[in-house]
Length: 268
Image 1 (cartoon, one colour):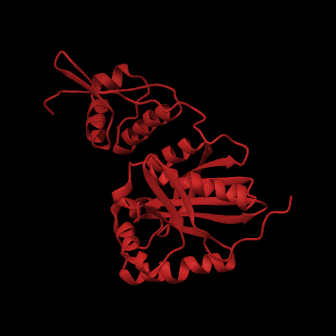
Image 2 (cartoon, one colour):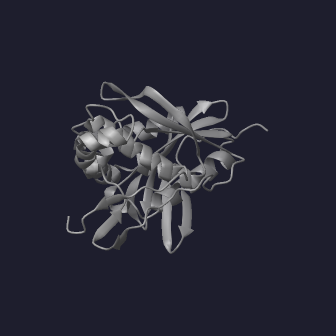
Image 3 (cartoon, helix red, strand yellow):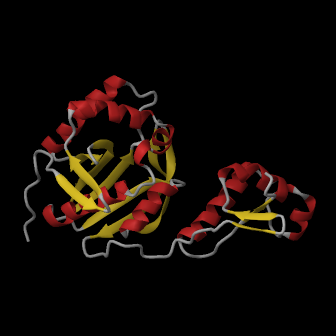
């Protein structure tokens, strides 16, 4: 089947779900303020390649020139995500030839955790597969970006592996995760993602691990008795070792392998 010609301007895609209306549309000059807020957000700057510092002029150039140019030359099908009439982020498909494209997305802080970006991406993927003849979409994220990975997991992407020193960001190369979704794949998780419940009894609290636990993990694993009885612990045990262990704990959750709790004093 011959795929349809690439559009030269963004169509309007709409989803009504759970009492919420999500619209994907082309960028407009008035989107510069929402784009500025999104790109000045610390999490956006941590996990994406937006320039730092990010200025109003950059936002105006992005919505007024960069995104329309992507539609004009076919290099990027970029949309604003609008939720109930409010700017909520951006989502794109970047054609790579041979019926392939990369998906990219970023959320404005106000909409994170609501499921609206996932809803928008489902509409975008349907459009890419059904209207643009895509057969495979690839997802990339810097290793450690669990929010992006969980969104991709919900959409049915299979995490195919990781690559060392692959994604460029401000002059450095970062380790990456990569996953793929084919047009024939079901749009649902392929594996279980285990949740860690919070438990409390007998003066102890069992809760999910946090990034702020790194110092205590280092302290515990540097203790002579821990070094003696826990096997091949690195010596000295560093922040990097603790972060690698916490990432492994999360990886086991993400692949349905095992649940692991932090045991803490409820007063902490």
